[in-house]
Length: 449
Ligand SMILES: C[S@@+](CC[C@H](N)C(=O)[O-])C[C@H]1O[C@@H](n2cnc3c(N)ncnc32)[C@H](O)[C@@H]1O
Ligand code: SF4
Image (cartoon, rainbow, N blue to C red):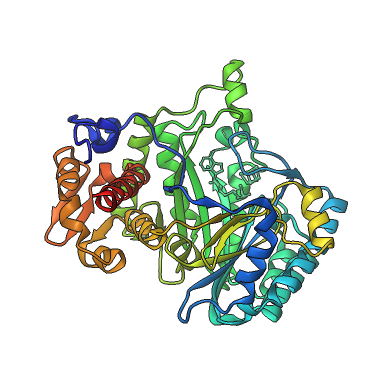
């Protein structure tokens, strides 16, 4: 039985659910427990998976991780290694070996890949030659779909003409730049390289090539980023001409450099949850006023050039083959995280071992969980689609929970659809996590009965 009086499940009953339905946002992903593969079986289990052909019609993506940045931004938890040319070169060499080895596995050749994402860190810190080589190697060794989206993530600092042209020559056909804020005071406090006007000019120049969709990330809730500054950041997105934008709320974690600076009184505190909710509302309104097309809760596109294929596939049941130190993915029912430790990664690649210290067997309901996460990221859960994935009539069992959410202003129940309100959108990850946990509870009770 679900406890529909538990505010952590159904939210607080408050006149202002956008700001106060839950205490604070949890981590970025909704998830659940999986079974750990014992360490001694990791290599064999992975090899078995990659010896198979997978299921016909499976959707596949590649994720390549480049764990270097020139400077660590004060709010960032993705930073791993400071860019040093010799370490990058050593890493790149190992990555090329890994690409050849993984691409040669039967699983990799069995079906086309729909999207490739080179993430980090700052992949744009690779040299022009490396960028071109990386793109070419991936296209040469893996069977990529003819309309495969191949994204290069990074920042505009140091991403000059030569690099951009090499990346295009290598086959990259989408670019995602972390901007975070165009405001120079906010940027300096966050230790971002370049002032806002420099970043604006550079994005405009890259867009003017008219060769690929250019999308940017903006963060809200950073120190010094008032509501006025945020409004200007939104306007600056439009002025930049970028084809799309992700609006991310700042996740403030213990251990971030920013956290220490705030404690030492060197930085004003970042926005609290209620203020971030206001900033989210501001963002949603702004995009609606300016007729930006909404692709998900946090992502908008200016026109049809931006497809955001990787992001939407990665949130569903697509399989993701990871490459590089710190890359994560899931293949043939196995979930893996590659080691973040550079030495271990280099050793494993040179010994032709998979650099995977931790392997999980996906839980039985993984497809259903993927579906729930994707639906909440989209803002709508369809009864029919849910029941098709669940294989049974789950929706009526969940209706009491959905009604409680509706009473608390988080969702609207339409015939056959659960639609997130603005408040529900802000709390979408929490709601998806709560729904996944509820399904697990109800199913285990059903099995026990
Ligand atoms: C891994 S970073 C790579 C982008 C690139 N290195 C850059 O910063 O320009 C991807 C995105 O994660 C987001 N991010 C980083 N730290 C975050 C945090 N503490 N909370 C929320 N989002 C964060 C930023 O918006 C960033 O653009
Ligand atoms: S935000 Fe980007 S550039 Fe800054 S530390 Fe994180 S990954 Fe590196």
